[in-house]
Length: 552
Picture (cartoon, one colour):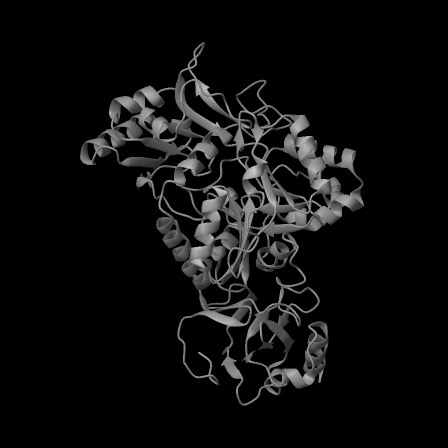
């Protein structure tokens, strides 16, 4: 009877009558269903009609709701979770410029040595046709070396545009051929929020591009890559996502110009929910807000354009995050803000009158402290709580800042792959002393979500989140899944529609290949979805039966 009551309540909430409802379209029974709802975290079964869940409960109660045309899925003990919602990613993925190369045996942060990099480039330049883009992934050893700049790259690859970038996306080095392709000249002024490094006392560019001086030109050049290439990359991502049980993604739309972004999204028609978050670029005159104005808000059936993102500082890795203490070994250096304090204040002031949710990339604790102070200065806590300003990464929201962040309603979106325990993955492990705030944020009551901003496999990221180098900050598996589902839905004002498996919510869910709450931790990354549902529609099934009444 409890399940029937729940069904009636759900129909009331969705405006449907008993006569209209008849029977569920699908029921899933006999499973371990993690609802992510703290009031009722586990159930055995649920029922779906149309695009929404109409009942949850025991197998016996839900089975009674089935009609002659109801598809019955016997979970056979399998684990079900709400559809994963990746709260921070960058799409489309891929490296379409030419030949992409990296150094898999190199430690990720340090990367290859300058000599190793130059030798590799010289060999590739001899082998590949002139004009082929050579895009390489490097680390601090190259990024911070004066021995790997435009002049040295020109000597080993004069006829190939070269782009060397870091895995964490802050800072690139290019040669003369690439500068021409990116349409950057020696006399060009620095864009707001970024820089073009120059020879001392000269206007001549060294080839080192920083922050908005890097992202803007590269985004414009990506516009020259045919839409069909990006559509294919995005469709491949969509196919991979449903196999992982990802049903929603929030894209920090930095890689393509707005018009091309919408064309590609429209053509790709992803089977998952896509939030495209405008990421305006800058010029020497200021932030180009006009480029996203007037764009189509729903370019595809499951896609919407919503929000606004800025990057306020870089990361502690290259010393770009603004910190309250000087960087070790660099007396007097605290990092820096990409924008002036007055510009940041205006961003926040605009957010108070805009319907768009504001998202700020914040890594340094000084940056976090500054923004929290400015928010307190500009409006009362209740006003800010309604805005749900997001700190993307928010690594610097330390214990003393968490009460203020909670009071202001700041939402923190963290990325487990940024804080990999070296004991789990030596090559990609975070440097000693680089620790993120995860559990302390949750326990302090700060709204918290997870996004990838790296490998898209959510179960790999759950492994990273539960094995942080600082055990006091590591999450439990249930906490990690909630942050990837309910937390991510809250982070985009969608908690009334998705994030938990409860009556009235959208039927976005994944039936997993193994129990992610009990398998040995090293086994987590091997998890896949055996059935993924978006809005009550099966968008992926590993072994479809083709019969409406049967399960797997």
